[in-house]
Image (cartoon, rainbow, N blue to C red; front, side, top):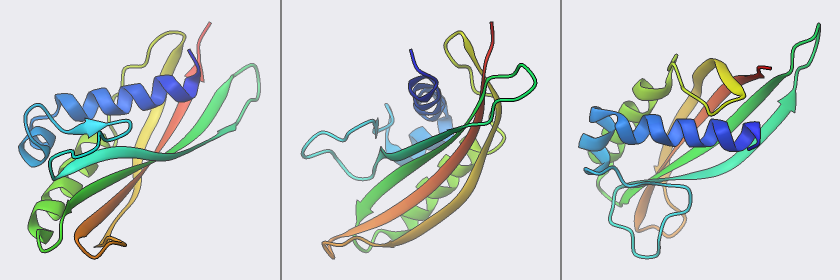
Length: 137
């Protein structure tokens, strides 16, 4: 398993387990890698992921940036704000558990934003998460 896959899986698992995220996105939480066609609103799906090696002094460290997209119906701004807040709270300074041989040294939310979706019928929220992942062993 790659560090990218391990980090993404840990982020999604943390979101699905969080009670505030489940309150905002349904129970079970509508949290997807790729949302199924016709998914009920609101829901979250993963987007762009970037990674950059930060090796040095015998460490194998990887800096990850993962974009999460939250979708709600147009006019449902309160629901989107609740979902953004729940996702941010669940992930900022989270103690993520990654599959071996990886460990998450740092997880923080870099920013959250919301706006009207390109179709005019949806609201779109974006949460950018940064994780420093170390390969151990």
